[in-house]
Image 1 (cartoon, rainbow, N blue to C red):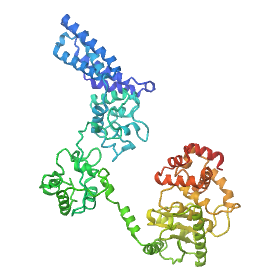
Image 2 (cartoon, helix red, strand yellow; image 1 turned 90 degrees about the vertical axis):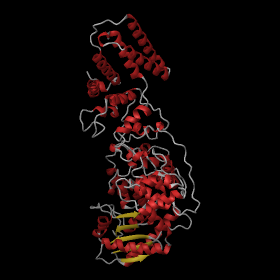
Image 3 (cartoon, helix red, strand yellow; image 1 turned 180 degrees about the horizontal axis):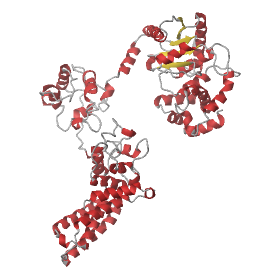
Image 4 (spheres, one colour; image 1 turned 90 degrees about the horizontal axis):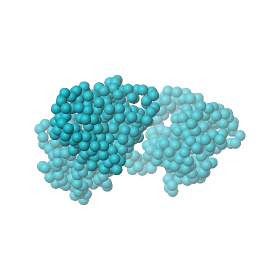
Length: 630
């Protein structure tokens, strides 16, 4: 009888039983019993010849030795247990008991031996990690985390997936890491699209979980099995002195990032050669002298990219030009020197992204050139939205105004905009010598609602603009883009909308708080904007706000979600945001609110940033807001 069928069947029965699944797990013990029973019953045929008395006595003595392993394991004397198990196994083999003499004394010893082997501690690094690394990492790593589950480090395994933990220590029948390995449905069983793991491998994972899913490596955040990898001696990094004709940072690193690192990074690096940092590049792979500084003829990597016929690298690509390969060779000949700042840092950090290159280009522009660029940008955006409509324009020290309203109206709004900037600067001072909006902020003003909605449709890809929204702000990093658009609603106060000057003040305040391009929550931007819009105390819109906000909050059951971006619809964010920002201001004034803004710029998670700034979980802040905020 083969053990596998019974082993899997017991596990399936155990994990599919509603009653048993709520009981503290003994599934691994059942698995052991199944494996031992099947093994012993397959070998223990009815004895037809008696064992010699001296053999029975020796078997009993061996069984006695195995009983000692229980107390030795409690004392953590693992090596002594290993010696006993190895000694007993060796002696059983030497006895070579014939099939027809294997009686109860033999089967009892074999059962005791299997139990002792089962109880022996499972090493995560030596036994479990190789199984996971071989069968699971391709779908569950940093590069590809299927179901938001990573299994490439012990910490990631312990964390689990978006659905919760995948390992419950000592309870394998609740641990998806084990249960998924024997699922009867091929589409649900793991590893997906591959053959089922061998029963001894499954049993190893189950035993590890049953024993507490412990860790015996060196670093919980290191790639699994990392402590077993032979550590190479530290490399000697030679720093560039300026005499080199080929720069690693300018000439070699871009080639590495764009062509090579895609295959030579992560836990499954091609050829086991991983070079995400400069040190790793020099350290080489399993082939030995991958790069020998000063000696390109002895550098295997140069052979791969330049001399072999056909060329082996880059594998399956034709992107590496001969000039690049030659530059690589020259760099090695000149000593493979480093002209960066940290050889331990990712090579990717040496190669600026397109956005970083654009930011650097903009930063190098003169103020005059930047202002000229902003005018050109305003005209180009207007042509995209209203190509057949001529816009009037007005220029102020900090704004360009374009729109379909009369020029006098634009001038009035421009004066109001400058007054708002002065008011904001008095409350939230700028660094010395810094302008509010580099190159000025564009203000688009439309007379008709349709024209305003075109900004959302054409530039923001929004098919529908809620009626309650009549303006929005777009600012990204480095002021590459900086504009706001608004529908001129007139100057008559209303309980359903702001007046045009109030809306303009609100939008400029939103631009002010997000002027560095930070991804702030919509409720915060809009709430701050409305709070700083200069609304009079008798404002009809302000008086009607609590009722609108209460309606928006009617379905909130978790107070912590009040601060999560996206909890409220776009047309609700301004109302609730006003109350939330006012509440936060009351908890610590502008200084504490500024700390919260700084935290949000470092950590886009509003709950985490607010807890850091206000020293309380957002659930607690939310409860206090509900009691006092309205």
